Image (cartoon, rainbow, N blue to C red):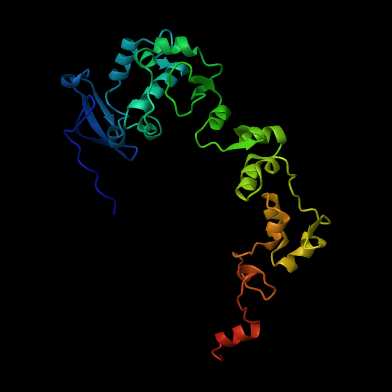
Length: 299
């Protein structure tokens, strides 16, 4: 049974004072609120959801936003009641750094990232330092210090690809003394980002990770191991792993020795040939006849 909604009548959210439940609209409960003049509002009534009130998205009937635009000035960046992309970026920057209810606050203000006084006090200063966006798809990016503050000299308009490569979670790879994002090395060498990362995680050196060829499952290609040169199909029963498993290991950047000597421990069946989860382990695999006898209670 659905839980009854909490009664928030009389509570205050920003300039809004909750008067009571509004008639149900489109199957969604809303609350009738007064934009209270005693709190700074304009006296109008509005209707909104409780989640918007609790999340800080609804704090007035809309007059608060209009008053901020008028007081701060958008310098030609408001047309028909809609603000420009540059103004939206500036407002969003302040929001995630200083409003604790903001969805991204923990990644910015929560980590101590701030906006310099010059930009925080004036959109005009921000626009003068940053200039207009090259395209609508560009957004503000902290560069070169991704852990630094929003301030002149550490910000740029960047594409989504540039933003991702400048993220603090970006995997950096050092090759011959030069450190770059794995994606940058991938663009230069033609090796996919994930392939480079997988190879390094499996012990392949950074130099080899960006240079090794991608293994393809060519039917007649031979691989040298333990003094023999055989195809994957021929190696499979010998090493106790299917040719698909061997191919996938090689494709991830495993060396031939790693791919052929590592046990396969996630098989669905245990076979006497050593395949499956008993591969390369000191475990006695029961024969089919004894296993059948056990099920029948004969053993």
